[in-house]
Length: 76
Image (tube, rainbow, N blue to C red):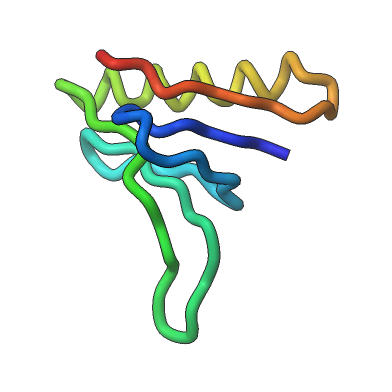
């Protein structure tokens, strides 16, 4: 299970999927009939930095050995 606190510290979500959309990272929480319900988790200066943060999330999951994971979105 993955829990992420958003960059603005206003939301704590358990996403089913984490995606990159240019300079933003979004957490997909659920699916409605015609669309996915998502939440912006963080916004960064460059797409490269955004991909670095996604990789940090991946590494945190890899290191967890199947345990529950918490991740705080970096400010920058």
